[in-house]
Length: 475
Ligand code: IFM
Image 1 (cartoon, rainbow, N blue to C red):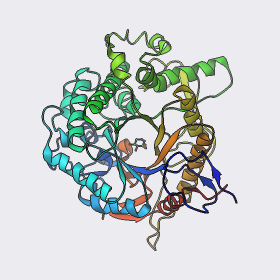
Image 2 (image 1 turned 60 degrees about the vertical axis):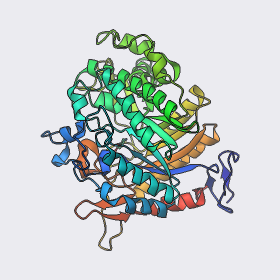
Image 3 (image 1 turned 90 degrees about the vertical axis):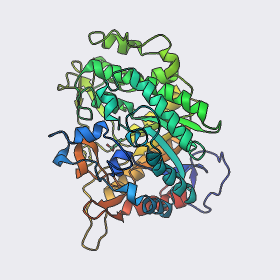
Image 4 (image 1 turned 135 degrees about the horizontal axis):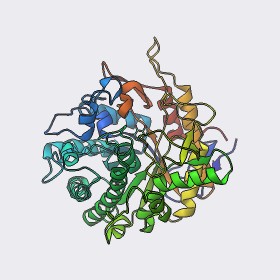
């Protein structure tokens, strides 16, 4: 077997000699990803106040089994062991999120030093282990006080976010080189305020659209603050869960359904952030909901502050057609025009179809739309019903196959010219999977939530071998 390089070497660094199979470029970033509320626990320590997810998870019927993130994977107390685990796997990068209510408990005013200390220790531990920290500022845990003041549908929340970004940058900017403003603002806006399956659980198309704009504004204002406070070498980024969309049939009506969802799920973020404009078709599609007067003069200059890379989170594609979606819907302005059809083929425990082509489609679309922007796959992974067998082993061949197929798609996208610089498995640990509570396991490391014992799944060993080899074994 001969090695197949996705791209010529572009940076210095050792490349594993004699590694057969699909090799990734030298310097490719191999990571794992987590988020604060999903793993940290310690919900009331160090002055942390409730976030919208603490409130939501305590609201009857919102989260499966009444689960909360109070303890989660107890990462706050086990962080050095978890970093040691990552060092052992050989990851080059670790993507974590900072809990806003832990470092600025009311969402206003000065930082809580005890809260920041946890992240100072985490970053030190990572650097000592030779792992590059990748910090996300907002992975959905809005301080409850800010939601009480109106939350993301209110403009002031964007200003509050920019202030918080400055506090985090001042505390950690000398040691964290990569900063992501927001994780998946589509989920925060449309699942949080549109169909209400995420915190804070509101169901209003108008609130969702306002939230989307104010998240874009928060991103741009936060990026500007980061740019002003961080060293010039800092990488400032944003992570979007872009939707890979296919028409059910090759008809004009189904293609128009794709256009509508592309507008309200993808271009609603891509256009303000990278082109300084609102998609005209989105404004037309949502005319019955809003005239968009909440977008003020100058906002789109703020939202389009230049950034250094884009993070892409991908799990599964969606098949859409002309039709209607059940209410409440996250598809503001499109719900009476678009239906979703489950794709054929294998599915994960989330009932999401397994289809790696969607990742290749997204990466090559971005290659064409944003040719000079480096890309990172900041999340990709799968939930399966994992369990420890009597000998204590956790065998997860379906996850290995899923990750292998998706990394192959990334390799193919690089070979096709997409500038993909890294890949982060979601997730390092089994964790609190939002409205599914602890019922879904995405980790490559199994967590026994009764004892907090960590066990590497077969996928963790497989990922470690991929990293050591610098690529995949097969041609
Ligand atoms: O667990 C989530 C994560 O918080 C955001 N992206 C999708 C993952 C799986 O649902």
